[in-house]
Length: 109
Length: 113
Image 1: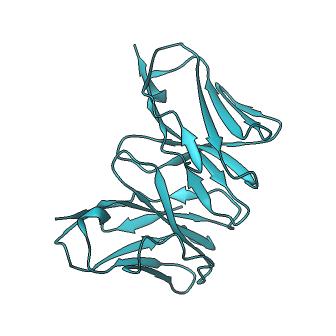
Image 2 (image 1 turned 120 degrees about the vertical axis):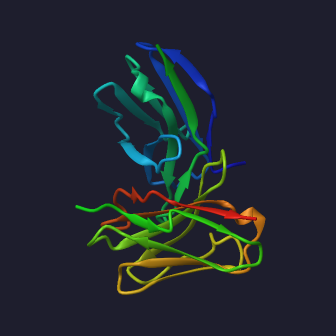
């Protein structure tokens, strides 16, 4: 079993749609959680950290469920510019970062 | 200020040759990380440095891979006797402290023929 698993997609949604991605992790000792965004042939960039209480940044909402060992990312009112691959990242207690393979999102006009 | 930089941006080499990849972290960042991303795959963690020390080298794929960091700044990843399966994008990231946000460089695209 992979340490961090994501649905690879692709998710094809119209502009304005709401879309959600889930990610599961296997190491119950994981300490920190993040969503990164990666555009085609570009480096990953931090989108947002994921806090235990859940957190929101504009149209983006991230949630963590430690009991079920998954994190989620919700994007509301999708924009064309949201098209990218979204990487789920889990940092364990040794500070090792484990990346999921990414979920590809395409927002269409 | 300047972000993480990596060189070369692209490298084509023949199977069996050695290659050296360079990473310049953001100034003042104490932690530096190397990752590999193969086509359509997620990022594979290779190694990280806390200052000049690498606490855990177990992520390196084989003994052909080595990395060093000197002066708490620049790091080099060396791949000896390259194989075709080494072809990937090698990404470097740095953070102010190990537990803080990582910022990625643009990567080095390595192609082994």
